[in-house]
Length: 184
Length: 124
Image (tube, rainbow over all chains, first blue to last red; front, top):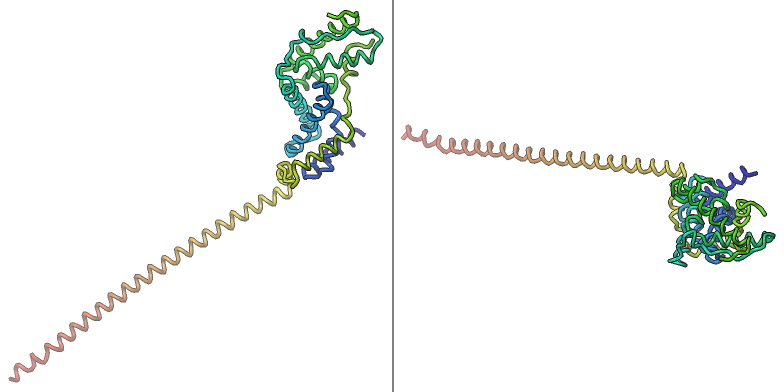
């Protein structure tokens, strides 16, 4: 099944490169959740996320000739989604660079409140500085390994490991405070 | 409560964009490229092996035809130059022969004019 889908994507890729826009539509539908979610988790704004995702696909269309396979396509889209999300965040908030320690504290929360906890965690991740935020999104949304994240982010693997470690530590501390009902 | 990893996976799970996203992308594509003259397409034809080899063969044929035409013109030019040289030589030869003939004619005329005077003198 997965292989059939993969073959279908390879075929859609070849047809798109020959100018078949309906085939390009198939590619968009197959990857829209990935691209849109990277932008949404990074920007926490549905309208900006849609803009970024549309831009990423338009850029893909202009570069179809460079895409070699469906794996390359996924990698390329992830990388462009990350870069365009960063660009959009910088345009929106040019001085929005925070250190991990400066990330806002969550509101107090009841331990039983899992959906709220999820929402809180989502907002807390969104408030982290660019790089750890992106690393967490690629790790937990896309399930990428450290090596794959390093490739997408064009950073050394040790840097990515360190970003992930510090981000998780900060999230744990802030969540623990929220669970105790302590607001700093 | 779930471990943080699971909570993060759940909080950061993929979400579908609003309804009609793909159609909006395709609409933007059409509005931005009404003539479909896109670089991706232009480059894409080059990726097709048959067209690529056809283009290579056509380019080779053009080069060969160009070289053959150039050589042909060079040969014609050389032939014309040779003909021109031969014509000049022929004219020079003809001119030399005419000059010789004229000299001979003048010589004979001079001899003919001089002869009766000599023959008349002893008779007188």
